[in-house]
Length: 256
Image (cartoon, rainbow, N blue to C red; front, side):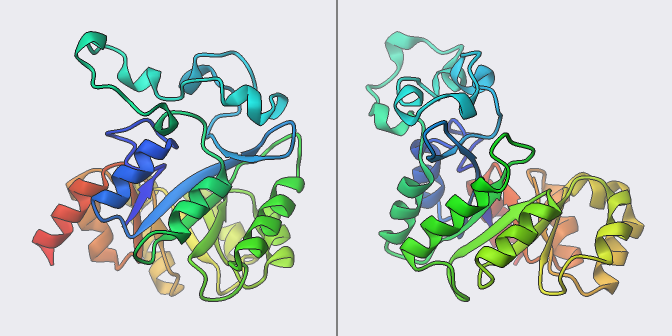
C-alpha cells in the first residue's frame, strides 16, 4: 500500500506532515510528484501553479526554493476550522518539501519504506527534471536494482530518459486512458510496471483483462473506495496508491 502524496486525505498533500502521518499508520510506500524550481531544486508539488495549494498565482518553475519556503502549503486544507481551537503547529510540517528531505526521511526511518516518484510533464525544463532526479538518486545510492525507488510518469519519453540515466531503477508507465494501451503495449519495456487509474479498470473490464493476459505488474491509483480496493485484490494488483492509507490498511487486514 502506497500513500498518495502522503496521508493526503487527512493532511495537506506533499507536506512533511502528510508523510509523517502515512509512516505512522504503517504505509509501506510513499508517492510524490516532483517539479524543478527556478534554481534547480526538486520540490514536491503536483500542480504547475501554486494557486490551489499555496494561494498564490505563481508558478513553481519561476520561483526559487527560498521563495517557495515562504508559503504555507497546508492553510488550504485547514480552511473552515476555528483557528482559536487549532493546536500549535510545527510549521516545518506545512512548508514546501524538497525531494532530498523526503528521501532523507525514508533513509533514516526504522524500516524499509519504498517511494514512487512521478516526474511531471510537460514542463519548461524538459529532460532536466530526469537528469536532476538521477543525480540525487546516485547520491543516495538508490539508482541500482533493489533500491526502494521507482520512477513513474505519464510521459513515455520521460521514462525512456530515466531508463538511460538510471537503468537499475524500476519504471512505472502511468496510464490515464485505456485507449492508449494498444499503442503503449508495443513500446513499453517488458519489465516496466503499468500504472492505470482505478476508473479505467472499473469502467473498462476488457482493459483490465488485457493487462492480466499480458502478465503485467499493476500499481493502481488512486484507490480510496472499499469496492475499488476489492476489485484490485480480485485482479491481483501488486500495489494500490491511496489518499487513505490508514483506512486501506485496516480494510486489507480484514480482507486477508
